[in-house]
Length: 75
Image (cartoon, rainbow, N blue to C red):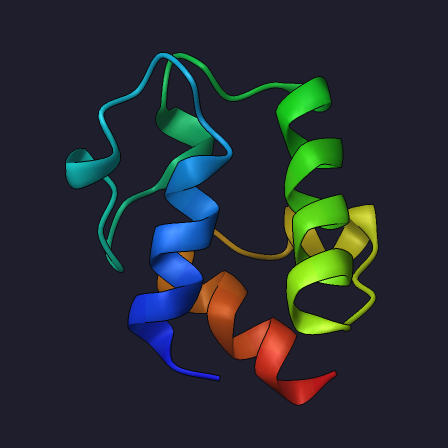
């Protein structure tokens, strides 16, 4: 799993946010579009695309896309 691939798939979960604006250092919970529904979409994307299971607590423990990627890699 490459971080660039993860970032692209993560960014694709958003519909109102420009994908190019989402980078490794992006604090995703500060994005206007972020909410509980998008959190579920991200969890489902990680499960479907990377065959990794993360919890809401895993998601809450991260601030940036890079931190989330590191959590997913460890699963």
